[in-house]
Image (cartoon, rainbow, N blue to C red; front, top):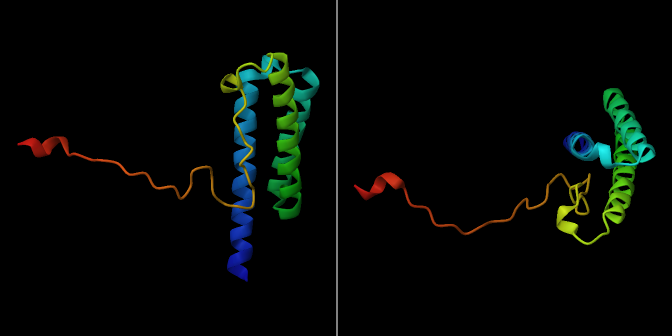
Length: 124
């Protein structure tokens, strides 16, 4: 039971760290294109999440991670609409639709790829 609780804490903290990193990176990359209210909402959500991480409150971290994601999605959607919505590949925010704070694994985790490998030094 203690291991399960520790794993949940680590997973929650990792999800929070990831959400903060992605949001800060997106703000840095596209902050000048964002509506000031959306930018302020994301920044406030980041600060609130950082505070709950400092307090080490798991339930607050989960709620604040979700709040940050919602602010992030709202801003992303508005920005996408402003750009005409024609080019989803050029969307400035990363796709976090598969992001699940409780899963403990990122996109592509556990996938195996078949690849050929040839040692460059083996031709001798």
